[in-house]
Image 1 (cartoon, rainbow over the protein chains, first blue to last red):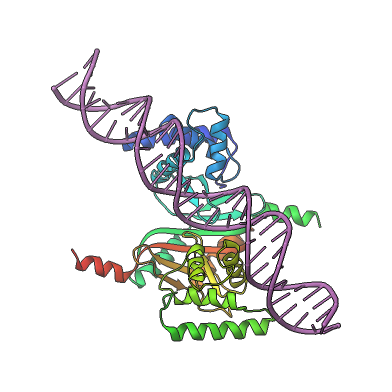
Image 2: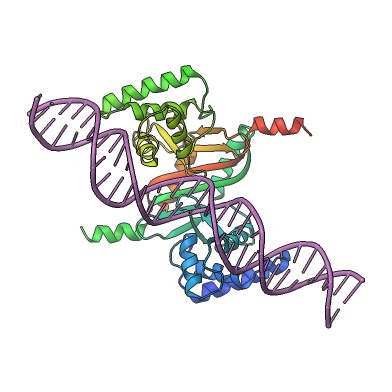
Length: 160
Length: 160
DNA sequence: TATGAAATGTTATTATATAACATGACAGGA
DNA sequence: TCCTGTCATGTTATATAATAACATTTCATA
């Protein structure tokens, strides 16, 4: 359920799925865009734009030394729903349901950096009810919960 | 229900309440801090740190020309629960329940900039249930909904 | 009125993001 | 095949947001 994986298999599957989706939609998952998606999938934590940029530089990729390169790729991936942006931390993380446009709820561990994407429809419902109630037209819903994940809690309890 | 007012009366009342709260808590609502709170209350929209800084400069306040001045005041006001920070826009807005620590839900109009603070306990409940369910310890809850308010929707409908 | 803690002033820098324009890649039509 | 226009990327510069580090001032109270 974590938003970030280290498993190469997961990453490969995600890339294949992205490829398929882009083909269906008639948009181009270029080398650069695929590589950025791969970098995000390969990370155990959500990454900032400049962290991604560093990896591109390590790749020795020409032109990858400038911010617009990575921001444009990120914009594309966001538009296609292949990644999510966490506004509370200015970082980017994978999306587990790229075919299905959605705003998830994100549990973000401030200790280990892990991100857990939830998709609780009840919450979506309540939020929609609330906005409908006051005639507000929703474009983007942001639900981010910051704290400590169970693993880090256990970890710290053990060291007491 | 809007988070920002133009009414001087509202602002004055908020400042008085802030004064009282700070006194009770034994913390100092200094001139600078009070002024920053006043600037935020006086604005019809949520303000960024640098916008607040501009107003301080207009005041002719010495030393108000540097970012740390305003960020420190904002940090204080946030700590005391006198204002909220909207992470999706990097702006600050007033809090309507300064005595009662809470994470609200914010409806942010991308047309007119108005912010509407809701405090739906059901949503809090659901989010808590979700985090409890996976052993996650919540420190901060962020719920921000971006879109268009009813007023702006009507406005644009009228011009069609 | 001394004194220490808290608040503010000040300079510099880091972090995040975009503007603006040049160049390159690539699909579809002549 | 080779134009040609569109989309993608390269490149330089800059805007915007936030903090680090240290100096100075303010203020309650001893």
